[in-house]
Length: 299
Image 1 (cartoon, one colour):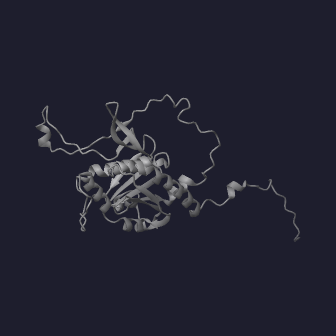
Image 2 (spheres, rainbow, N blue to C red):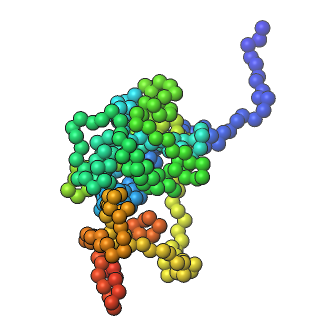
Image 3 (cartoon, rainbow, N blue to C red):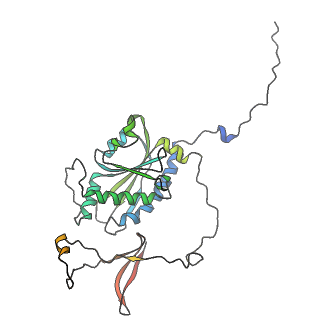
């Protein structure tokens, strides 16, 4: 038996494109993308949150990304919190947001004219009076995410709410200890008040769907159009100024008649908005015998 053989290849040796055999993005790259998105969300939150905070523009700081198991995330959030799950469509990527029970109850108290104080012992569930506040909070967070993360975009966007994170998909459908999430915290700071947090969490498998193969590319350089350029210059925009707001008991409302006087407390700074988005603050005065507003701060 001869030991010398000559092997002939049946076809050309494969020469794969480096992009096909390159190692996929890891946690470091996902963390970079998520941090950039969270910073954009933090900037976008300031305006929508102002309506919940007495028209005071808060400061929103972005933390750092950490990876937790689903069980660790559930324990951190606690049994009662204002939790929301945003999803563009069934089966699509999900993002979970959570605001602690104490912060949610404080916002509710302030909505009804209180000073935001909350008892040391928290209830087992949110009172019915919190429903409106939680909806407004959910709407503010969704508005800040719109255009940054796809979960809040489109006509098919889904939003689920639950007081217990463990009862929310996907944790209710499997073993949370076997699930991994990328988590980042946004800290909301108001002058003269304790800060509170909004937690953002995305399943690690969804991070791959969102960011893998889609690096952030620099935008092409082009001259930005200004507000004085066509077609924007002639675009009419309805501007609203929220001059005053008061709470009147139902019995008083039912007894109103022409000639009655309702006392109003004038705001020091009046929010000026376009379709619910506050763009400036101003002081009320008069000019040429008419009520006028002098812009004091542009947002």
